[in-house]
Length: 319
Image (tube, rainbow, N blue to C red; front, side, top):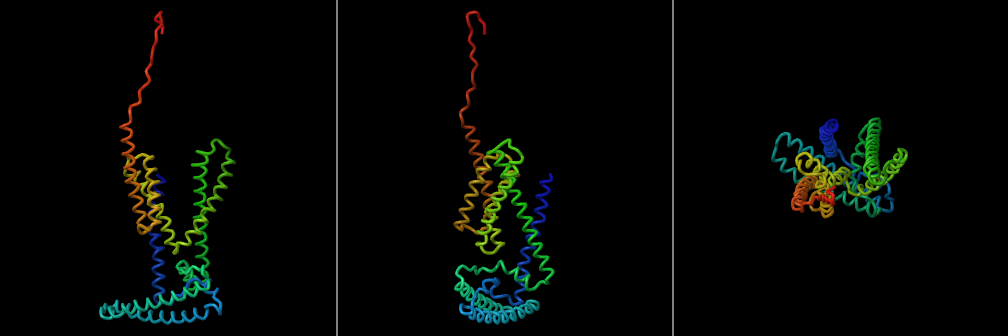
């Protein structure tokens, strides 16, 4: 009952939490419609530009970008006033102008990206992960910046510690104790747990390095989650609603589903968020199919003949 309550509370808290996380992005986007954003948010790559290798060109493009942003801001203010007054004529007049302003800004940003790539071919021009940090560093008071950074580090450390602890415990209890070594001392189990934590830490670092190549941090989290969330949800839905399906059928269905989901992601068969839906339905459908197949094998299997007791009598009729 406590586990069920924990899952319910997690669902109730996570939905509004996710809403506010995404709302922050919307609010920052709105903020930069009325305030000039940097042409490139990663200052480290800008500092690598030398006076003889693109710095002057970058500054020239940055000046043109600021002028284009100022013109765009004026048009946005006019559009917001027209929206409040519900003046459809001005709204229809300003919409194509704003599209042209946005296209001009995007073209200038791409020109700046080309200069950064020319200076450093290995530079990542996808600067979306630096937008929130730039906003925090440039527009929040110093004390609040320190508090926010402390909260981010605290949340990251707590999440990482609990994840590594869970992985190490699962490794020791479900794998080492069950299959590799039984009836060992507690000291040995503690030692194996420490080594498991270290190995899982290396694995998590490798995954984090690869996830950093997926672009936007929130998008990377959702991509990696979509590879597994659908399968896990399908297992829970099968347990709740398909009572006649046993564990073997669900396990086989989950393995087949996970392989299918990874192939669908690699081949870009569909958008990654749909992998959650596809994975859950695939597990449920395959579980029913495998269960029917297993039941059919049991029915058609030949009956096992029971051993017969043979009794032999001797001449004196003694058993």
